[in-house]
Image 1: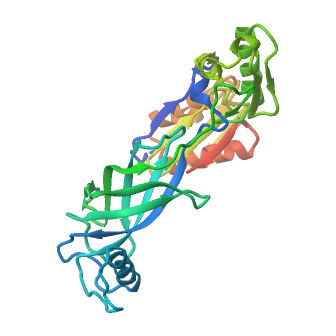
Image 2: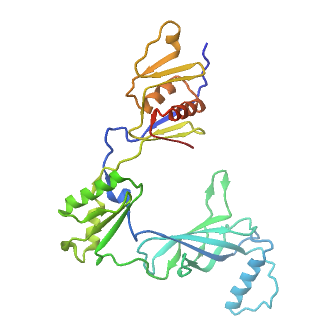
Image 3: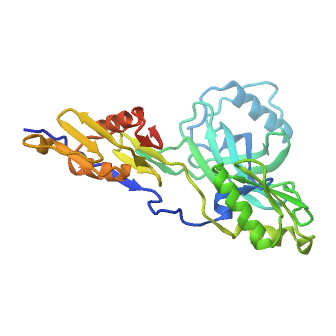
Length: 335
């Protein structure tokens, strides 16, 4: 008698229709030069109730330097205070950020401080990769909850940083704009070019490769780069995707991309036999042979295996074997 391992296999079919649905160009591509920038800084959190760094050379030196700037000389003595903690500050500077706007920041301890609860970050500069200061951070720290309890060595300060300089080029007078696809694909790039040229009624878009498209601004959009980009990013394009199967053994999840197919193949795994394509079986063999049409997709196969209570481990083994035999028409990724 056949023994099944009862597990729940979640089957997710991605883009199962014969053609992918259209997506806005802004959702599948970026405009070169329009991106966020990472900021990082070092600072001190004060006002802690004995939960700061117990003994840290850099915390003491930083505190001495801060007090020196404020006119208080410690003459090289250690403060010995546990109400102060050294922290690393991180933030994301959005595209076209302007001086005076505010940013949310995250504060992380770097010493042995037990908690940032109730602390206040002292004014700290935030730098980008070019080592230039783009924002200054300060404020009261909020400690949030994490899985398993409260994680008190990390906190956030909403609107905790003020941008000190403008970021981003002027787009209104640009003559050429470059788009980069999130998922480079020759078919998708060709469709983008065709759609843009059709809507602009001319040959203004050119694909440089599978992920890069250049667009020359038409004369009617001279000095109106913002309006041109607003029109272009709202265009609907049907992106093409690779045939791919992704399996997560830990969660029993199978994600199947559009277009994945199985060629004629016969599979024998334990007490299970599967044949894809025309086949026949007689007697007791009929009980253990499952026939799938040759035009079947991996989704059809997984649905049947799911009904037969195949474990995620067996499912992965079967899919890998089909791929190794060259019968899986697509990529297979195991997480």
